[in-house]
Amino acid sequence: MADTQDGPELHPVTRELAEGPNYAAISTLLPSGRIQTQYIWVGTDGQRVYVNTETGRRKFENLQRDARVTLAIRDEANPYRFAEVRGRVAETSTGPEARAQIDELSQKYDGRPYPAENITTERVTIWIEPERQVVSG
Image (cartoon, rainbow, N blue to C red; front, side, top):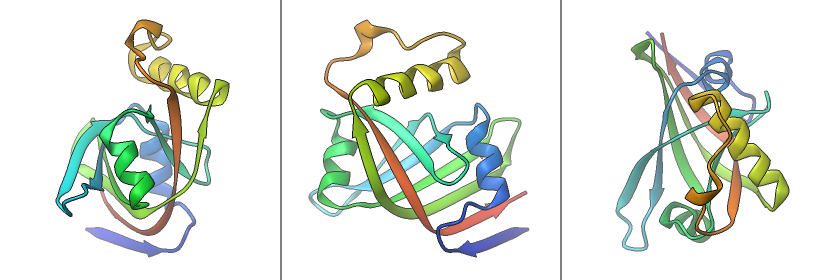
């Protein structure tokens, strides 16, 4: 059964799934208006969810142009359990903070720091403020 919550406060299921090594699908809008969806690592500070990418990636370019975003986090142990976060980019950060956050995410998902040789442009953390959440499970 699905549960819906409006507003910026994270739903407990959203927080739980973002804290664990569960993958998310991020959807952004291309310049044409079509939707682009990619799988990504996700984290939370307990108040907001965040993702980390590079400034040269299309998803970041899309979000600079249009801050609307949907993030669907699935429970890797039970793919029928999920949290969908519809919201907007509230903040972005680059530099040492973003680099440290990709290392934290890499530790959570892969058990090691993020390989420096995989970085082609500057890392950026994208903080998402929920407007509506739908959770199941």
